[in-house]
Image (cartoon, rainbow, N blue to C red; front, side, top):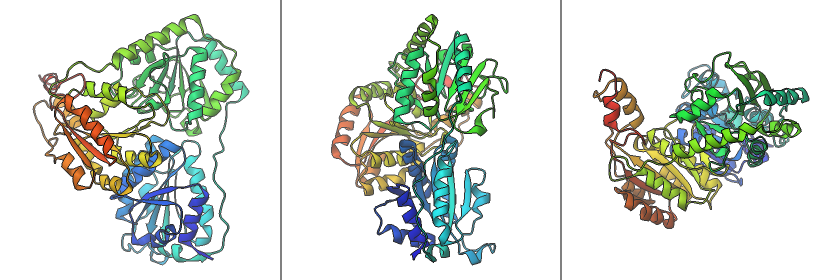
Length: 552
């Protein structure tokens, strides 16, 4: 006989879980006790939102569900930010939440929450394990559900008395996904569409990728000389130095890439939904009629035709689609290669850092230095803010598994994600980019990094404001600053206070030696970069944005 807590941990072990993230709570003490005797590592976060983001980032980098443990009530609501990331980013996530005893339900007991109502619109499945003998069944279903089709989060509530109840039940085997694949008729239809196309464009994104499918994607694109664009914060899916790479379809898109999308007569959307950000606020394509031939391949059947009526839809993972495409008879047309070459040249020009921005710190030179010094397997993480443009536009991603960034634009994501990445890949460089506002959303997780020995390097780009909001504010209400100023601490001293390494950079020349010292320290490190507030974006100053604002 085993307790419900022991059965939970046994079930996680059977699913191959090596690490869980959480904040301890009295509501799931029996699970914490079972973890004491388990090889599963418990990473103790400082806030449930950070724990959920760590678990989500691990899932992004491994393809298997990340697991987060949080206590009932406030613990669960705190975790909602990470759950939302998993939902929008199509990431498999399992959140195990403590719950009141079964006999107290419906009385508004201490920290009681109806998790179905709270998370129902955000999760693929929300349920409660109401008896210990159902633990293997429920955990197995949670893993299958999180990974199947369009991946996403699952929340399981764990009543306190269920966890101490005993049962004798066998463990369920490891969950594996069951996926669809294109039919021969669909392959033939796609072949015919390609044969008719003069200006095809391949757009890739989503979450159901592996290192092998990314390599197959490159071979597929090379065989047909197709220009390849990636969607927002999915840059690691295609080598940026490859001659077929056309750039990323995200915030602040290259105007030439937007024109390429509009000019295409066959748009192949592989793995992603082409939602608000890549579609440029749903402006690049008509709805529901896209105005051109569109082939949409997605692992979730519910996404095919949800917004755009495709000429051809296929319910398949990227790997299954690419495997099926081996039978295509069409070959590249003479003009395709030239079009791809022009698209890559436009990307090269767009991604060249600016020569100068206001102030003594030139982020363009810093980005160029990092690209020259770091190995191609270095992992970059970030949250949300104008500072992220320096990565997305100017860093050259070369390999799969080197990016963890929130497609949903969640602030505070970078540091928790970097910690998860470093714990998963101890020997690789892991860099977190964060704005001063973004960092302070989850900056307390630096303590988690120190405690776990996760030697991440955090670049805090400090301009003393919520920069993205200030940009919009100056455009809409020029000169009327309200609610966007920040009074910041000494971030380098903050790092040292936790037992990490801290550096301050006030000129471009100070960055390289500061980075090397941080790297050599072997400690979690913060490099506090003091950026001139005028350098609001890589291409426009604060004064220019204000002058161009309404009524000016």
